[in-house]
Amino acid sequence: MQMLEQPELDAGSFHLREFSDNDVPMVQQASMDQYISQITTLPYRASADEAVSFIHRQRERVLDGTGYSFAIADAQTNSAVGQIGLWLRNADRGRASIGYWVVEAERGRGVVTAALSALSAWGLTHPGIHRLELYVQPWNVASWRAAQACGFEREGLLRGWEIIDGEPKDLFMYSRLR
Ligand SMILES: CC(C)(COP(=O)(O)OP(=O)(O)OC[C@H]1O[C@@H](n2cnc3c(N)ncnc32)[C@H](O)[C@@H]1OP(=O)(O)O)[C@@H](O)C(=O)NCCC(=O)NCCS
Image 1 (cartoon, rainbow, N blue to C red):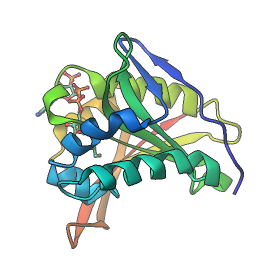
Image 2 (cartoon, rainbow, N blue to C red; image 1 turned 90 degrees about the vertical axis):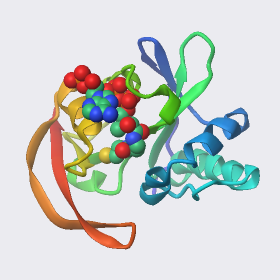
Image 3 (cartoon, rainbow, N blue to C red; image 1 turned 180 degrees about the horizontal axis):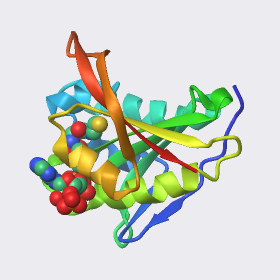
Image 4 (cartoon, rainbow, N blue to C red; image 1 turned 180 degrees about the vertical axis):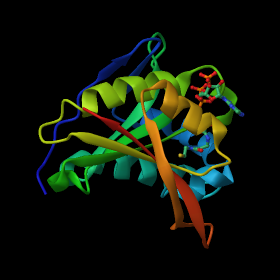
């Protein structure tokens, strides 16, 4: 895997930056949402040490070449409200995937729509990447509305695609092409 360099991306009222140890309280707050712990490596109700370990894992993603994990932060205060990542596991086939979450208290005010818009525009400038993918559970209306607002199209339902909470779950496949 190739070592990458993490940029800082402008996302309007937000910016996408690398995680810092100052984000521990926000990460602990996110870990109170059981669904976030089911779809990430963040333990449910994480201790401060577990939050620090999560942050360090995010910072390692560029170093081991698996992708870019950004904190979504307020552009004025630099206070983090969520996470968004561009993952390069299938980059040799020209495909990258995106995942994200926002802490509950900050939802419903366009955070992920702004972050996804910025990350997907930048992701498609990545050398060799022509296709971005998002996998969304059908009940997750906020997630797929954000995807559609950012130019992603639903391609179909992947049945039993991912084990989430110990069960195979159906996922909508969304994509955006260069
Ligand atoms: C999904 C998630 C990231 C959305 O983040 P957000 O910052 O609240 O989303 P936005 O405010 O940008 O809203 C996106 C769209 O969803 C709509 N929306 C927001 N909350 C909603 C809700 N509870 N139910 C239905 N629609 C909702 C918004 O109106 C907007 O649609 P519109 O532009 O057509 O009006 C957030 O709910 C979350 O972190 N959930 C837990 C983790 C998760 O599900 N991650 C994604 C896995 S695929």
